[in-house]
Length: 115
Image: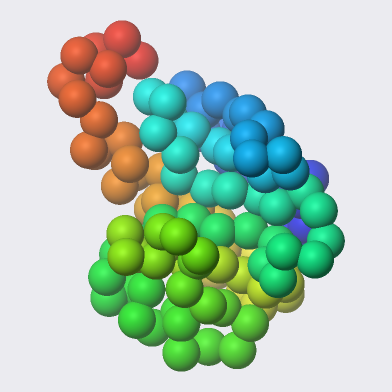
């Protein structure tokens, strides 16, 4: 996958918004809570990051090209150093799981507004 295919996939999920923040990061959010971040500038050391379960975090960070995400690793976010660190067939379910985990934690009032 690349920036555009990740962007298209994230925006295909219900109620997702995108915003540029911190100068050069494209954030994908549900209910104003981020679930995936794409780095728009080279030189950050990673191209994207996303939330995952504690078990998947431990598994993924053992693989080449995947590291704990700066600043948010304590919340079980991983960062891909390059897009080919994961196959598309692996990445899409992880992005959807990130979306679902964030959606599940939204307050009832916010969930009701999304319906």
